[in-house]
Image 1 (cartoon, rainbow, N blue to C red):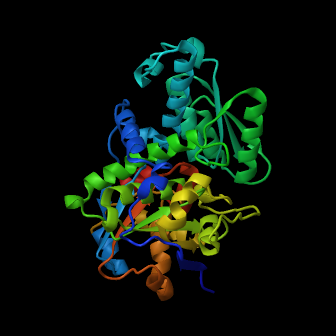
Image 2 (image 1 turned 90 degrees about the vertical axis):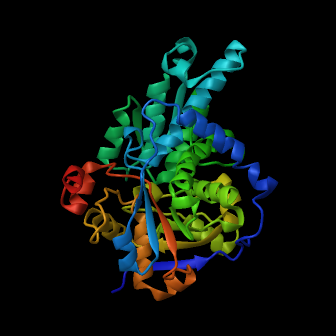
Image 3 (image 1 turned 90 degrees about the horizontal axis):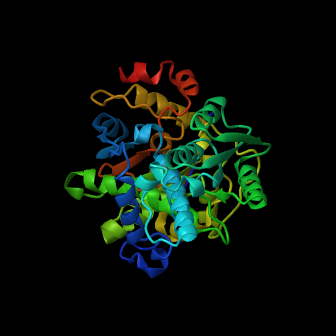
Length: 404
């Protein structure tokens, strides 16, 4: 029995020559990306995440090039999410201090030094998470000096819950799926005067998710600098939970490369394919049920309003893949083709490669996504071994043993 995978072209995709435009710039902007880069690159411990060229893998898959952005080392959090949640927490506290004191400038350095502890210490930030975003928000709260409460659904693993708690956050478990935990976080925050720091936007809630998303743009800026001669890839495979990361990469590369921008391909699990179904329908579609998938960071049933503003015309297509491909991808990166260095990726982090493995098996997917021998593909290694116990179970070795 074959493993399920399917792909579509986006019927509403904008032509290559269409400018990014003012309407999209009111969502994700060049100024927003530049401000986030200036801020985050000043934080202690900042370093660009490596971009690996996987020539052995490219040969095996019949592609010209495969590039892999490895976010495992990002600020010690093992995920690109470190760029967004913590940046938004800093901005929440910065705005709070400026409003209360009537001043116009507050730096992250001042927050870290607890210069406004009487104000920041009374604040509480919260969010729902499948693991990585909550870890970033908790880390940001610890770094910049406020209280943090994180909501998780029952399918979030014990290892991921413990990692969040390790940054001093209170972790609360909610019955239901990710979207249920989003609603519980919002209701509790409204009742107690807390601030929700989410990468999921909805009517009336846009400013903070925009901070989160502009923070993610640091990764895109690094990629543009790291590619040889700044040459754009032909395809970017970006995993989508609520769609924030995929929208950021699409927007940044559209602004940066304009008509030479790569085709943005959204990658999702078959059981949590809200962006895929939304592109097919031409409007946001909610996917219900348990959304259970090993790609824990992608177990989301509702596309973010802000992400949809970019993806509904910016995405070239989408692919939905079975969990078996995600597990194969994790193992393939740990045990690479001849000449490639081993890479430690979680099930969500390896989902871009999982999509390529599906295209290997399904010629119709390869044709739909225009993957030929001239394709230069960028994969986003969005996470490492965020749950070491699960990683060892999948690969048979620890991350340290794989890299050693």
